[in-house]
Image (cartoon, rainbow over all chains, first blue to last red; front, side, top):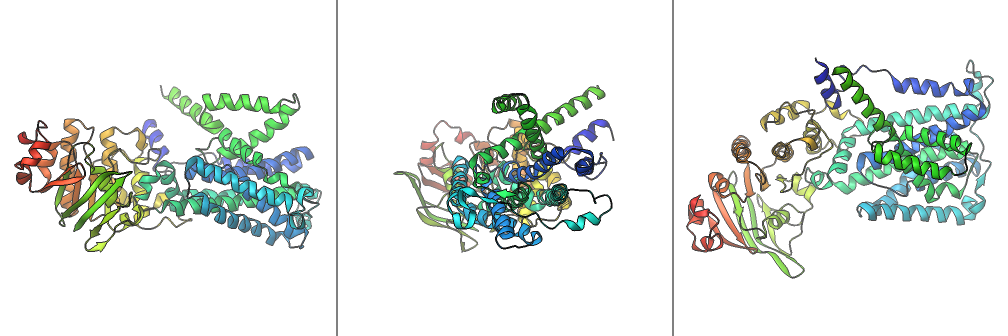
Length: 338
Length: 248
């Protein structure tokens, strides 16, 4: 096989044949897993934030990059997950092992109800309706004192029982925060693997046909709205799982988590990293968290710098960071061949 | 057998299609012709469920399919290609057709199988049949116009339709491409025992393959019959005066 045919086929067909690359996924996971030992407490804090945001952003990208739906209200499902998990654990003393999946199911249920209405509209109207639902969720979180704690939120949510991890060799000295980070890392890794599998499944392929051309998809026999709703529910469910982890990670759930600006933030993460790539949103999450703390060390005009970076990126590399790397890699390969 | 009877559709007082009736027998190749704005595309959209008729009915093998949504009509055995090329531009050629097979075999609800393993042979066979073998890995949006039209035909065929509706299958094609497309259509219609209903501007194309022609003018059918009958119809000659129909 010549270099040229290898280049073209790798893009589409035999993803399996000759696809022997460096196992980046495993390397990144292992590097992330060593942070509590090799890094400072603050590094662990940042790593946890990146991990959780990565799941949130990848769940959004199931809509944005795979189904072609622009949701301005994805934070609603993140928030529902955070509240469901927080309320169950703090108010009712439900163990994490039940509260965590319940958060995903609760968020998926809310996505089913709101999505039922949203998928009836298209494009901008769809986006505005998702925003409306997220504002409703925010209003409930902010005002329903008896359940959500209102503007006081739900502080001091207990950590899950993670003492069992201390008996694992090498883990005896880990703080509860570090142990929770490791648990989150494993749960996020599993979630990402499941999402990856879903995107590669026949269901995922149908979603990409809807993204590319909903009219044509309908005339292949696809019930477009039903599939859009299914995608919305799956994305909402995983956002809920991310929210549950986030509430525990920050030791409390507050109405801020459901505020619409966080929906914008997760869209920025996805676009920054590249919506056309599975790992794009995760890279975007890492970049945004890192940039945020790196830039705020130097200047208070963090949003100005972020805006400037986005501007350059959108014009220079519409495929995001991962798209840019991909482009660069293609150029290097072509240069080597020439 | 496709039976359209008394189909009407108005847009804000404008009667785009008015009491149209056409019957296409099984395995027949039929054409709907007419000047721009005669209502051809509207008629197709009514048959395929993209528009709901104000009145009238569409029957497929005796079964009333009037007003069903497009995805249901497709499942009942009506395939369609569109006037403006309608493919999945960001997917590869292979993925385009494979997706069509996945949907046809109702695998879309499977969240867990690896889609790239499925229907590889069916996809490869169909690609060869529509003359796109070797283009598997090409991103569909980068194909030439003629090839995109071929791919679109493939998308329609993947759902194994009994009736195929083609909206100007050779629009925008060069003479060579048109010729190839016609031969392809004839071969595929014969191989698959298809009932074919198409619209077309190119009269040469129409008269070379259609067994039955209906002429649509201002939303009405003004003539219907064999190519010879239609060619000699005085009303048709009047509408098409100077459009080269008599030379075809």
